[in-house]
Image 1 (cartoon, one colour):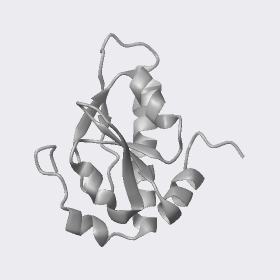
Image 2 (image 1 turned 180 degrees about the vertical axis):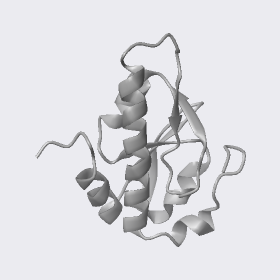
Image 3 (image 1 turned 45 degrees about the vertical axis):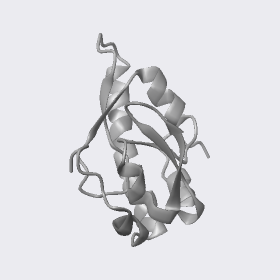
Length: 124
């Protein structure tokens, strides 16, 4: 999937909350590794992160500064999405921020619970 072909809203409504939460958490985990490497020192202003939408086959790249990424990660239920990809979450997510290069989607209900439980930064 590319940024030019976001998932349809009909697809988003058919996904279970568990599937949405787990899929987004998988992409977030990959982005945590990207962030870790990038924070070691880079001259790149906007780091290429993977879209964290609920579409399992998404390969869209979303470019954020490290500060922007940290702003998204401040909440364990927030995920970065390529513009238009927010529909993949269906009723299990809502847009809380819109930016030119990305949107921030907050997971809701059971999807939020799963996202929080799978947060690699979670301290228990």
